Length: 205
Image (cartoon, rainbow, N blue to C red; front, side, top):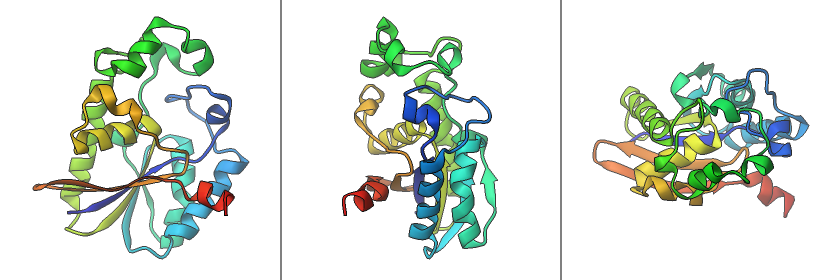
């Protein structure tokens, strides 16, 4: 089964300030995020990674670029790895949204929620899992590939492959620049690691 390194993009000012960037263009890594991307490249640069795929959004591409350069590979953008379409919530502060009744649905019963003017969590989960299945079909057993994406798509993919109900996926956590590892094949899936946040480990060393 191919081995997927599901990497959340590094920190940007929307993450830092508690805003939903969604699919906004020109959201770039901040100074800490750029440092995280470089640290990822150092951490994974000697791994036998066969391909580096990324969400087409800038913050993901900028996270993937140092790793791809270290591996002498190109970053391959994949639309299926993109962030959820946040619709009318794009750019808004989580603090303000948390006062809405709809936010409680997002947190406790996301299977019932379509973001206003945007995507449903069911649609997003189907999209990301189909994308990973397509990539799995392109790679041989035991090949390692990196996929740089976003928090919710990664959590939705992990939940699906572990058989966790959609309404419980919010219990998972993936930090900026963290690595979650999962194998995907015709005979099933296996979670190897969730939210390996090496930057946190380094800060506590």
